[in-house]
Image 1 (tube, rainbow, N blue to C red):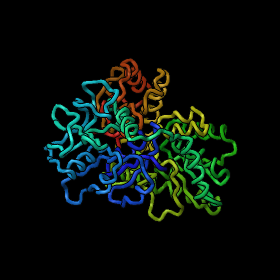
Image 2 (cartoon, one colour; image 1 turned 180 degrees about the horizontal axis):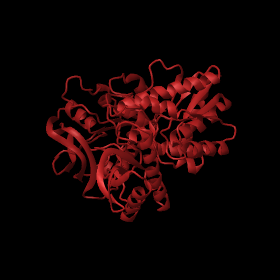
Image 3 (cartoon, rainbow, N blue to C red; image 1 turned 90 degrees about the vertical axis):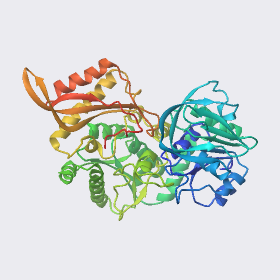
Image 4 (cartoon, rainbow, N blue to C red; image 1 turned 30 degrees about the vertical axis):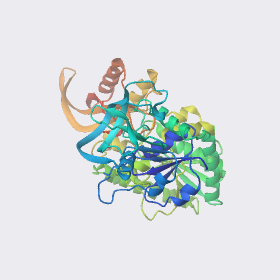
Length: 512
């Protein structure tokens, strides 16, 4: 699409977030991994270039470099974090390596008129930093446009050319005014907003039809928003060629299988849905497995084995469809750029190499909020769209240590109480995700005038927009009290409840 945003990916965990923000603002964005030839993408006449952050130091051997075509193209350029450092080094600036780096929130002070800061009208902005290198001297013909307490050059811009650089991440939800800065950059570049989710839905349906042709597709329904929206999208594209299988792996939330399958059957009576109870097989294979990565791989392998059996009942099946989202992909493998591995997910990193189906992941470049927008565009009922995210490996990664049937029963009850109380308080939509985690520790308590030696549960509730960053939810103290009181009184074997007040980063949303 001519006039779009082309993002050069240097491996940041947040690269796709730049694209998501761009699309949310109405500007179509494409991502190109650093190191690939630029001649072809530039021939498609993008309207602006964005250079992403990255985990490397620009001075490291084999670190991704800056293609000379980027600065010679004459296109407006926005360098973010690592992108700023690349521009500085390429044009004669001086960099240094910080001893401990700078990670998390910082106070940013705009210094000079700069199109990016237009309309913000603030002397100080709270921004999100994540870097180890810093620009000590800006290149000739550049001027410093912003600083922090510890960073004299936190932003810079060319005096005459449309090249702007920020050391912080404007794409992150926790950067104050970040969305305004991105919009200002696109407007200054002369781009016109026009991309909509309806465009994505139309193109996705066409792509699925072309890919599947006359083939047969099998889809795993997990009970979450992602697989539900994927099912409806695929059903719209290929109709009866889609066969959805709800696998009860014994790791689901209370009442999950019945609730989701009945809701989908009611809303889409012609959608082929089969429910398979494979809980005994999953729990048998998980017995004694405590490492979280190994749990994912065991679940992934069992998942595929179950699907082979279900596919055998359908005759020849050509495609396996999944509701994989970008946060799953970027935290599991690095499809675009040298990003660091965070964790694998069974619907990404746990799949065997000899997969007997062709994999279809129609949502893999979308974030959760975009999936909900797509679901709304497709007419998915709100009661299904606004369910809290639930990981593919299910409760297995919310039990720290080996997965035992008794512990699953405890965790289901505790988790149900958390979700029920949050719903009763009218806060379910204000919180991105809320759940309970069972710890492998016991503590002494007093119950009924007697000594108890029970297990501990952690309640985790976060606010987020896209799951790439998240903050712990400031829930009312009386609600936290109800969590604790009900869990301790209604779940035998638990005598202590804790509340997780860590944010992402540095933590992740899930514990494993």
